[in-house]
Image 1: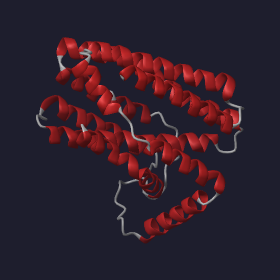
Image 2 (image 1 turned 135 degrees about the vertical axis):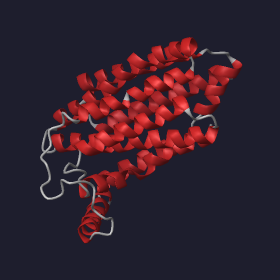
Image 3 (image 1 turned 180 degrees about the vertical axis):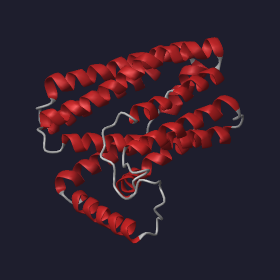
Length: 272
């Protein structure tokens, strides 16, 4: 579990690199659309291998690494598109765009959570992996609808060497801009907060083995639990979009921290 979790987390640790690549190297003349299509194809390939050839834990870890990379890269591209559209808008409009993204994610989780467990019980994991391989293709298909101005002069393919002076110059400028942004207190302090939050040890693996080996939860029941989680996420998005968009972030962080601590202690007491 540690190996698989570690491999799946690796692509998310270097997300700024994906931003530098997509901004500096247009792929077939596009900085967004082409990378989304490629990410969807890589995701479909990884889950197709899981559904057919993979029989070892290390093979599964490699395929999960590839699938996680495709999701992380597409996540960066989509975030950049959201930032471009939110630039110059009010906090309310920017919050609405983020709410739309997270709400869509929660809706997708609601649709897939219950059925994933039922399909595992009925048809097995290979079948579920095969169905999952079809989902990244939706990203590739939707990417064709993205409205983006074609980059003139670099439309024949990704034949831009990494040693190219323009790429190095652009990357250097991006790194300097990123460093200047991170140095600002209103960016640095929230970054430190998020780092400390994410660095807090989690009990996800222990909880999974406890619920499956000790309590005997079936895949279908775990799917129902995931369904409740997705519904709660959607309710949280609705709460923020309806009442908290204009509330100071300090108050939201304080309320989230207190609520999380209370629920965490409740979970510990229940397990004990």
